[in-house]
Amino acid sequence: MQAAGIRRPIKAEKLLGVWAERRAKGGLIKLEADTRYEVKGRGLYLVLSGRGACEGKNLLRYTSIFLDCGETAELHAQETTELLHYGLPDLSDLQASADATATAQAAE
Image (tube, rainbow, N blue to C red; front, top):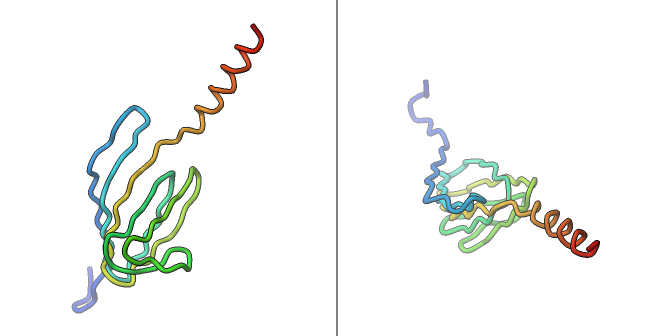
């Protein structure tokens, strides 16, 4: 239960869609002031409004953040902040397949 007059920081996420078998996706994230939010996985985040910080660097309107596979970052909203998120597919296994195919062709 929350004490009267104390506002708890919140976040909201809205998934806009998931496409293809590799699961590319798009969504919106809204962070209220003083909210911390961990982002992870291969993706691109674009600040649409608000301000804050990511790993000690300022986040302002139109700032972008790119994370590759296995990377994480913590966002800290200093005021209400909205971000557009594009979840990018992990394509790392395609290079391994291409290398195997090239080796097989060279052996013929």
